[in-house]
Length: 366
Image (cartoon, rainbow, N blue to C red):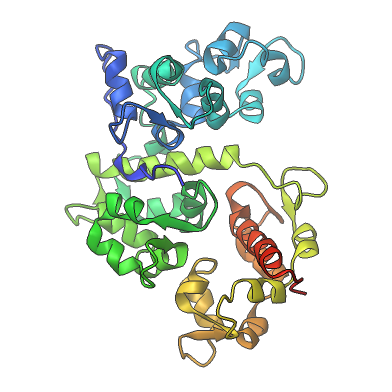
């Protein structure tokens, strides 16, 4: 997993006297003179870039403006889906995203931008700030417009599952010791790493800190709201959630009709509940701890499954409450009937765990 730097986001003021190296420094969250993908995607959203790079605000890009945004001389006809000679904001959103622009600038594919590679992203970021769009993400969260972020506003803007999906760059379901210590300190890391394996699973994280707890952690003055610099970290996380969702690539093995989203039937075709349980029960004791299940369920769901209240969920207890179909519904946060973008993450992790189990054991878990 790459640098987990989302909790050190700086917000620039809209001052036209800032030099390009000043903007680079604001994006370079860990100060290593490189711009990692996570740093860029936490610093600004695609919509901020779109609005900033359309100075006349007419809602459309001409061929030069598209090039200025994407640095790609060949992309205009691909974005201009209705062939009207101009590209609307929606056509831009459908055809590219912040991750793709980053990857184009990362000419050597090493995962970060340095030297001339960074110039395009810094230019776009500078335009975002100078054009007055630097607080667009904050304003999206701040539904009552008071420039202060309440806990309810933050909880309504993003879920912990979205944060996990957006920050799990290698999709292994864990954070490393340096990632947690660098953001939350050694004491919290030691509290989270219950099994002392030098990494923190999503379940271990959720057991100690849910989204409300995360809000409280950054509410330095315990005022019950995030004001000023207190907001920066949560805005950075929100930016990454939006960018990671837009850049999500659906696994074609699961997405059999190729529509970019997962239907319930597509998920049910590739896994059963018994396959999931066996593949994720490493000690083969036929039950799960709370921490093991919190990687994929919230506390309320765990309590429903833990019928006898002993702190464990047996296979039988799980079968009595959930199956693949209902779990699909649980993951379908917006109730659309499909898993789109980050909604797919938990299902994908479970599917990969089944494949790994089968490969490692030479058996089928059916």
